[in-house]
Length: 239
Image (cartoon, rainbow, N blue to C red; front, side, top):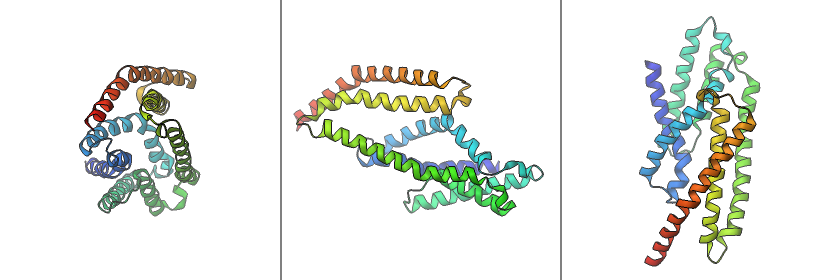
């Protein structure tokens, strides 16, 4: 019962901080309102955690520390995990009040390592797994920064610098939607397959992702693009 209550507080603190990281740019640029962001986050962050959280949860549960060392002292492991949740929740709430953009995943990883070091010392930590996690903290921002930079250059070159950027922008919209959907579907089916009860080869996952992306692109081209064109035209007439 105590663990459930603490997990709820931890989820609240993750929502307060991590969702701000995800939706901060969208709200700041005016793409969505704060109310819309809260509704979208409630639905899709929860869905994402269910479909994609299994692998992360498994890593945190037994990938960072060697749980086999606690076979004789299960109570210590339970108390340690609860302590890790408390430490992570408290720090994230403090960070949210101070408006610090931190990572909820890093918090729980650090908390789990901390309790294991106190409980049974350095031997309880799986250091190679930790090296991989720390490496991802540096590799991920570098790769995403490079990709977003290239994408922005292409958008500026083929859309923003044109005399009338609207036609090219609308043509590019189905492509952007398709790419986003393809990545998400592939991630869900590849990483979240155990939760969905699926066991598919990677080529089948790639094929399904591509097919779903094409369907969404077709839908956007038929319905979303004309709607946006009318909306933009109406706004230009008002101005």
